[in-house]
Structures are given as structure tokens and as C-alpha cells.
Length: 126
Image (cartoon, rainbow, N blue to C red; front, side, top):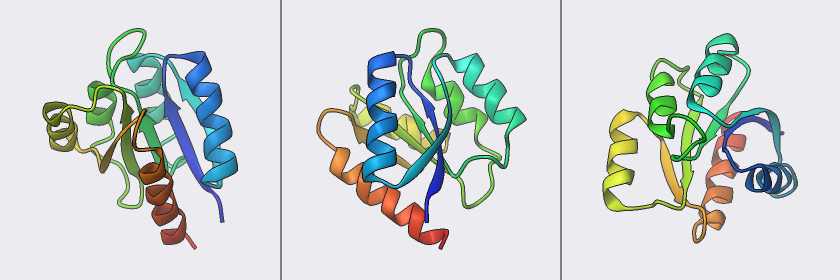
């Protein structure tokens, strides 16, 4: 069973690669994406029940992923917020967790862990 993913990523190349990766490897349906904090927050506000996982980069064209994480604080219990960033410092991991992120993965080194996490989310919906 697939799950619905929402991507917040400002790089068109990375976003396109992530869509293919998530659909092919993690059995996700990418329902929409955003490249700025405001765009992401607006979409999430208008589509509260239309996603199971939001995958957020920390650095965006305008704004940042921390604001997006904070905007998801009143989500449904089954909805997960995941940070996927090249800026995977201990401080950023902690700050993301404090704002409500369920998981944090390094783009360059932890894609296998992201897939494993996606498998957990997908299996919780079956």
C-alpha cells in the first residue's frame, strides 16, 4: 500500500530525483511539492488530510524548513514530518526534533534509513 508524501525542497533536480526515488523505492505517491516556506505552509494548511509524510529540506529559496516543521505541529497522529538535509549537524537534528520532526536524515549518507522509515510509515497504514 502506498502512502502520500509531500516534498518541501527548493532544488528542482533534487526534487525530481526524490520523486522518482520515493515512488520507485519507497512505494510513495508524491502528491505535491513546494520550494519555499510560505508555499509549503499554505499547501499544508489547505490540504490537512491529504498527506501521510512531509519531507522537508532545511534551506529553501525563501524561508526555511524549520518554519515548515513548526507549521505541522497540529497534524494528525499518523502524519509524519521528516527532515532530509545536507546540514545534518547535532544542533539541527535537535532543533528539528524540538519543533516536532519525527525523523532527520542526511541527504548524502542516510537514504537507506529514509527508505526504512518510509517502510514503517507505509506498514502503519496497511
